[in-house]
Length: 225
Image (cartoon, rainbow, N blue to C red; front, side, top):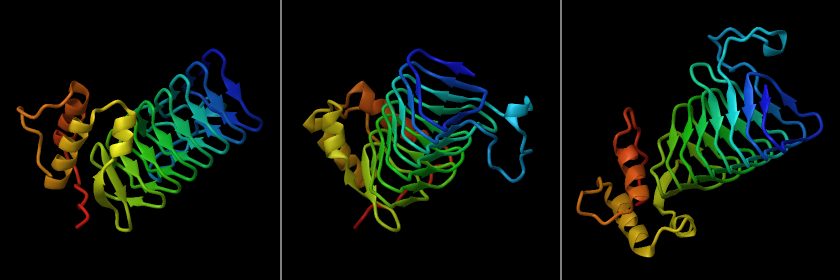
């Protein structure tokens, strides 16, 4: 177990190694960080007895875990929550999940095993993400949405079944992305086209779009008509 500087741990919280907590992290009451991955085919070992057969949990600096947050150890890689994240009450982060910096997971969000959430994404109340799915950078997923396909970067997604409803204009502008670039991304999402070399995009936006284009085994989400 490794705790950074100025870490606040609330009453009845449980931390199980191997776990690394960054600086200025807040862990709320009743939270459980660490513990064996919940996979039927994996041996359910008990880390508190020194029986370690899994990968660590890593939580970055300045991240807040509110009350009753649960984060499990990884089965094939560390489970990672980045820096500057907000995980609200009853958030569940399963084994092998990677959550990028500056992500917001609202109350009741559940991330299945091996999920990737890219930096700056915002998931609303009680969103459920199926195992091995991806939520792109600065995407917004509306409350109660079941995510069984991959969410493009910068998209707004909601509905049952989930659909791409457009660009996350407010989130992009709040992140310092200019209006012209937001409009260009909106056109790309609507047309489902890959960005061409001549399109004027910042390095940050292009990197996320290129990452999305290069994803193997991607399951595209339909666009609302």
